Length: 483
Image 1: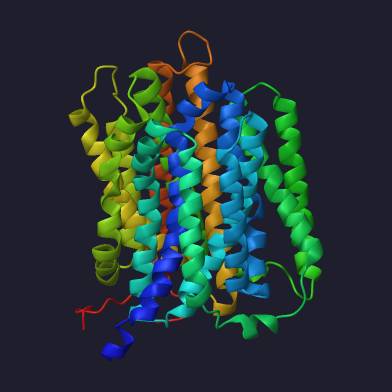
Image 2: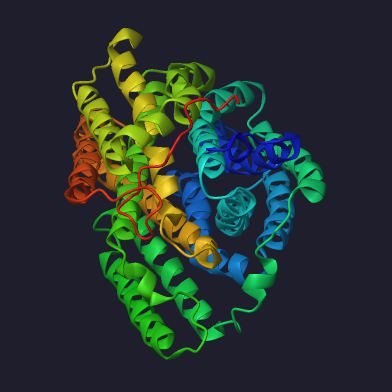
């Protein structure tokens, strides 16, 4: 194998730095806000419902527009969409920092989520488009996935540090990072696929409106599940309307000359399993992260900084994902490595089930270590599998599908643990209680285990690297990447 196919020059590393910075920005933005929620509630006097809405608004914008964002990136240009929505992300993150009332935060977070919905699939497609298939792309995706996973874990620490100063810095810090990324992206990033995608045909407006409306309604329905039986009829109505729009979308796509989503892409078993695995993995972690934050801050009285430091060890994925994981994938295949990550996650959550009010950090440490390992093993293979065997002109769409699954998982995980914890709280109030936390911790265990079972169905066949449409193809990693 030629070393020229392995080595990346300075410009290639610069491009990768910019794209990794963007996905790191998205991860750290969400994680920092989660840690700062108690401080925001105390300062602005927000109700529990409004506080939950601050998180849900971002998920609603992200999940609602993700499929549209992925396809628009394919049709209108990945670089153009990436840069434009990075600016929107920057502006509305800053506006969130100036919020004085709950509604201002809700609007800022919703638009920030929409911006991320267009940025994320464009960024992933730019990674695959700027690095040729083979060792370079494998290496780039490994670094990209490790950075993305690191954003979630390191954001907890950064959020704790910033919230200890002033929670508004949780919004202002992404503005600074966005500006740096933007200045570097303009001269560095190219979009080689622009001409090819420009020839793909017109834009499916009816399909875009129907699927975006469907996603918004379905995500909103999931968010409403937090309220349990309260307003159940409305929740069911929202789900029914969302489902009706999905059916309408399928009918439109079957008849469209230039469909927004080529329905044939959903016939790929590996693609479907990868998306279900992403939903389960991120859903279980989002639920656990919320419960862990509530346990440490509201039940134990730890500060935001102490909470962030407690979860710092999860950040080992930042080191392991780009170094260890590609070699494991090369040896065992994506499916087995992903399976190991989901099993590690399920075990991590199970070890936290007997949590008590007087637990020492030593008792929590095994869970944190296993979660770091789980992110190392799962996030990279999920990202690699998202575009595996997919035509390069549809990489934006494939990325949109992956990130949509992640956001649905996040929304489901948060809603499920919230509903269970409130229902199981012994005093019947809406406040956090140890009984409620213990009961809700069962949700991440079950969800992660279910994800592992679904992933295991991919063990059936293992095709050779480079074969189109391979079953979560094992990715080749050079023996000496420093050459």
